[in-house]
Image 1 (cartoon, rainbow, N blue to C red):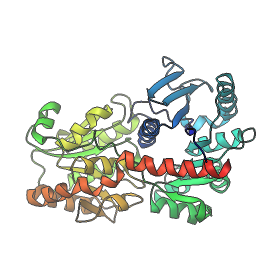
Image 2 (tube, helix red, strand yellow):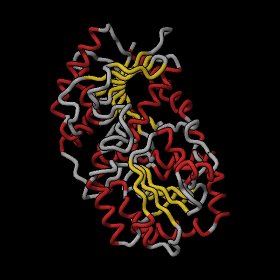
Image 3 (cartoon, rainbow, N blue to C red):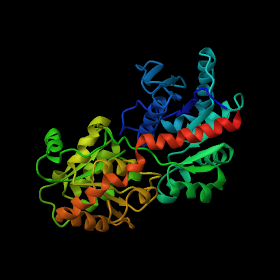
Image 4 (cartoon, rainbow, N blue to C red):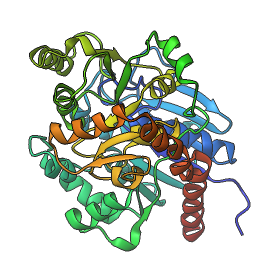
Length: 405
């Protein structure tokens, strides 16, 4: 019977959990890694996150808390874009192995995050045949099918297929993602375990709306909120067009959180569209917001809008609901498992701005209904509290480690 604590290497080649959210190539996966490592550490499991340097000023090793740390590995220049990282994987793997050997580190299993990391672990396992758990966070084939204008390489899709068939265990964050893995990639169903993303229920909790608005400098206007990377896949253009279709726009504010404040091509396109739609006065581009302040935005909002073409899980919706804010979301992917139509928000089955506008109008015109949905919101996501989710992942790790020992 095993008595020593587990030791886990979380591999995330391109996504450092310390990177600022809302910028290029950062999002829910970064939050997931940070919280998972901390929670595992609190449970006595050693959790090392291996990732590329994203900032040359960072030390190689950053402690996150008891038993948890981030280890930065050199592989190419620090500013390489995600799409240029694949040729750097051998360098990343070599330097990761050197770090392990020079520090006398042995791991019970690797947990890869995203296809690039899955490829890295496949290379590692040429020398270290230990169990491999794979998570993807997004799937290339699913993105392309959801929005044909998305461009994903054949290399990515081939790699995802290989990893799904080679890994010892696969973690899907929703039932929808599990079905995508089976339907699009012929992944073995018996290797897939559905464990949702977690939500930090202490950070994301109901606060006084008035105080949250005063903190953010927002008055008594009706407030709509968009949070996430400002990119076409997230549907911000559809949201602007929905706002332009609202019956009552006087005094309304739309806050868009995410993206670089200056020089971001997508934000510049959205600014131009807002001008064409004559809604510029209503739209505020808030830029990148620190995680600890994000709860203020959710609490200041009357409604959070998630108009994505594709979400494997939909962390923004879960965070908003944890704050007691109703969500209007596209009926896609994992959002269908977090937002329950008519219970904690509404799901919109079409890509029609008019359909989104109709539900937004309904909630903005009916405080009783909006408050009723909000009152049920937090309870609806209680199952996503990080200690509960981390317990499920730790149990999975323990089973694999025991089977391989």
